[in-house]
Amino acid sequence: MYKSILLPLDLAHDSSWTKALPVAVELAERFGAELHVLTVVPDIRTSMVSQYFPNDFEATATRKAAEALNTFVAEKLSERKVTEHVATGRVFREIVRCAEANGCDLIVMASHRPEMADHLIGPSADQVVRHTDKSVMIVRD
Image (cartoon, rainbow, N blue to C red):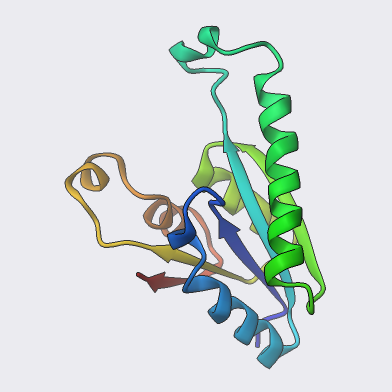
């Protein structure tokens, strides 16, 4: 049914993958689907605070994110063939872009119970659901 599954991860927050990872792996195994994992480095270039960061901040953060993702995959997914992706930008946009660019027909991601700030800003899972035509499975905490 599914050919390619995307699992977005926030490596700084275990809650972004603890429950979603086993679901994505099980679905990939059941359907013989490719598994893609993505982590996103938030883009600070347009932010007013960007002037307070060193010029090479984005490149350094992206390199560290790639290293952390590689370590994560080696530790948690060593028995599976996984394609790793690191992107820079707005989280929900990069998730949608990665799914489209890699032909992913399912996005499996974690979500938490919304808090007041989420109603004002909107969590990534909600924004992904609203901005993609791909199937999205939300795995709750």
